[in-house]
Length: 239
Image 1 (tube, one colour):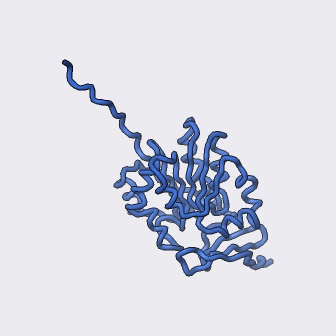
Image 2 (cartoon, rainbow, N blue to C red; image 1 turned 60 degrees about the vertical axis):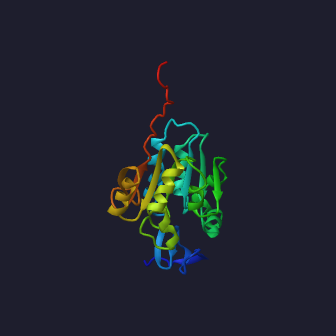
Image 3 (tube, rainbow, N blue to C red; image 1 turned 135 degrees about the vertical axis):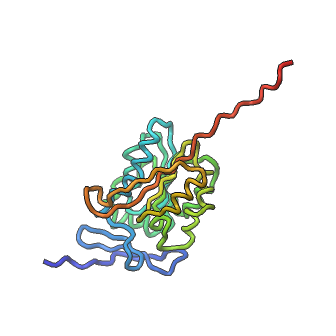
């Protein structure tokens, strides 16, 4: 028996790109695509969940952690963060494309559950770069699942998140011992080296896309801003 055809649910424009962003459905499967290239599907969620669970485990015990998520997607990273964090946490989600937020409350609402209405969550329709630049040491973790990682697919402006300029800003925005977690569709040795060059301690993970024992792997980098050294006031010399 042949599979049912994919049906276009909605389409939108990506700022700074000529390619359309499409939401498609095939039975219970949903896919968000740029042109004909798939960005994400509800059938593969393991790496998107791990993008939240790994850094949140490292933040365990930290009082009132503040998390920034770049990219709402299908909500798997957000829901995993909510499950891992306590009631005093604050999660800010930056989503550039209003249609993605509308899909989260419309055709994809069953994937999001009540996560968008959780009192710990704030959805901001903006470029995540703006929030990263909003002030020093604002976040305990920044979770980026934007434009397929350092090798972007949709808009050149997203490259600023992953170049030297963007990593300096992320380092500035993180609190001491804070974590920059980055999702990528494939390995990138240059990006991993760039993280280290800009002061991060880096761990790399290869995570199955579907969370199982087989299937393609995605790459996660956990880049930790080192603990700031203690600063002691000068005692001066004895009289």
